[in-house]
Image 1 (cartoon, rainbow, N blue to C red):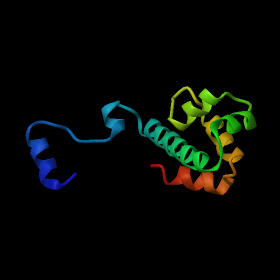
Image 2: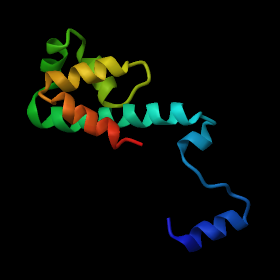
Image 3: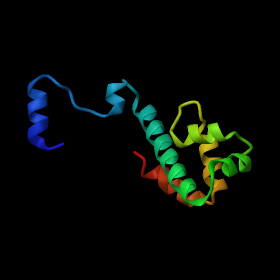
Image 4: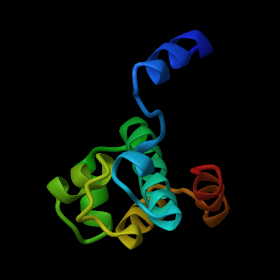
Amino acid sequence: MNSEKQKRLEAKGWKLGGIGDFLDLSPEESIIIEMRLALSRSLKERRSSLMPALLVSSMISSSRPRVAMAENGHLSVSLELLIRAMLAIGASPQEIGQIVATAG
């Protein structure tokens, strides 16, 4: 957002911030959400170019809808499942670490 627009919004009483501010999250909760979203986006991007979701689901002993939920950042999907899916499609622990490190 450009600075002029930001100034106009603030002058009208709007408070600008991130999702953590909006949802009143602690800094730790915000970081975990950012990590989850980064892993989800990466999983979706990588998986869609490599293989069908059904294949990934069989590789991690889960269901295809669960893989879809993982790719869409659903909160019911654990970070462990996201990481298992990333490893199953060939991501290295170092690549996963890089995704997590740049999430926040």
